Every structure is written in structure tokens, then in C-alpha cells.
Image 1 (cartoon, rainbow, N blue to C red):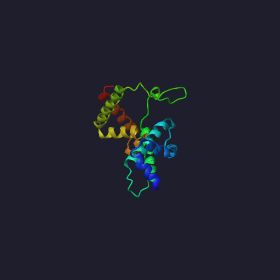
Image 2: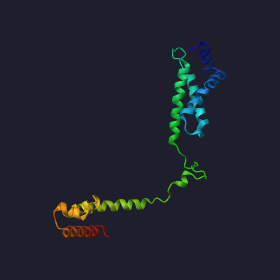
Image 3: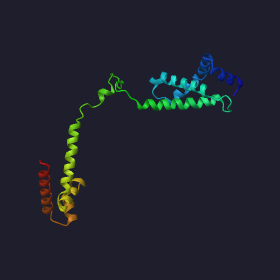
Image 4: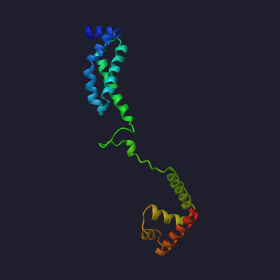
Length: 185
């Protein structure tokens, strides 16, 4: 590190004017990092402030007796600071932020008629159906599973079971009737 920068950093640890001079000298670096890492330009001013705070942190925490150059220390800190800032702002999206040219907000787009009660009723009915299917005879359960869940045709089921077509149809019909009785439909 050159003696002039070393002296300026030492002075900046005590003097606000020197601190401001150091911050201003690294503003082009901050702007370059913002250009590279910040996708949403509406946060440019916030990112500039973040970069300046990183530089101030570097001034306060830099060991002037180290062999590591101050410029490299600041550069690395600013790069990571702006990258982290960019990652943080991705996580927060305001519901009132305009997302369409007509001024529509995310809040307008989100479906507000989600019926939690209906969803719970469907879930409960599905559980009751699963239990009712488990209580069917092995033959009935096998036919229901193959026909409704594995999308096999009645002819395929007949050929695999090696039985008459009408026997499979009657087993399926009895299973459906029993399921309806159990579910109360």
C-alpha cells in the first residue's frame, strides 16, 4: 500500500473529512459492483448507501500494519456487500408493488377466494375414501386400484385375472356400491 493511502486511512479513522474523501474515491467501484450484481435498478440508491457503509466499515476495521493492501480489502468487501444486498432484496416483494403497466399490484393478482374449509373437507373425504378402499375385499380392491388408479381397461383387468368380463364388471359395481355406502353418498 502506498504511503499516501496509508496516511489517508489512518487520518480517516479520526477525521470525518478524510473519511468522506476515502468513501468518494471508492464510489466508482461501488457503482461498478451495483451494475454487475444488482438487477433491480429501483434499489440503486439503497445499494449505494450499502456500498458506502461497507467502505466506512473497512476504514474502521482495517489494520494499517497488515501487508494486505487497503484497496484490495475494500474491493473484496464492496463486492461481497453488494452481492449480499442484492440477494437480500430478492427475498422481499411488496404486495403493493406495481407489477403491471396499468398499475395493478401483486395483491390484486393473488387469488383471494381460496376456500380453506373446502380444501379441508376434500382432504377429509379423500382420507375416508382411502380407508373405505382398504376395507374392500382383496378382489374388489384390486379391480378398483387397477381401473381407477392405474387406468387399466376392463378387458386388460379380465385378461390379467383370467376371468370373465362380466365377473369383473360385477365386482367393480359391488365395490363402488360399497364405497358409496361407506362414504354416505
